[in-house]
Image 1 (tube, rainbow, N blue to C red):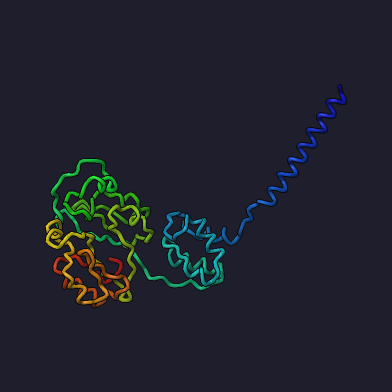
Image 2 (image 1 turned 180 degrees about the vertical axis):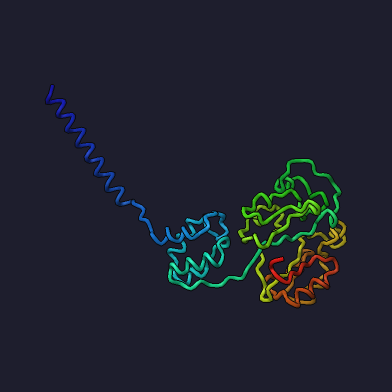
Length: 276
């Protein structure tokens, strides 16, 4: 009887030893080695995990930076941390940080209560995404702002507020980090991340209405009517589907002011500086 008990103990002990050995070898083979550089870079990041850098989050971005060579590092950028954070990461890597042109989100719509009066009352779920599926909008513009604030809820940096008087979202350019959350959440694609021009400002068409001129103007007094005056001033500006688009690389100095001054509806916005 005692021999049987001892035999079982030896067998169980042997199994336990083999199992422990196998687990030890597996842990060594599949161990995730900690990269000290990744840890240091992650510590320098804001840890917002917004995805604005094009990576899954700050950890993924830190790994990409750690594994980059000097050439590929130049293509990596954290919009939230900005130049200061990228300079710190560059120092850790022994690289030179490249300068980036400042950018902010702009709203390509001027469909305020005054410019685009309410024609149809919307009485349903307060969500732009849902409203876009079931309604053309209270002003009748199928491409205009729905005034329900999905973009404001999506902004993690307090850069968007709803103007109660106009009913329009407003961008605080000093808080905007160009993360692109508003771009992703707006069902009508009204937001765009625009970079500063060489002159230090920006010029853009604040309209997305693709209706023909007369109909667009009826729905909103500030609508682009596809008159092509802007494209005659500069041939780089294209007018397609009754809508003008100004490339961000165009210098927004004297040209920007000229474009805004000659737009018959005021659809073109010119800002002398990126920050108001």
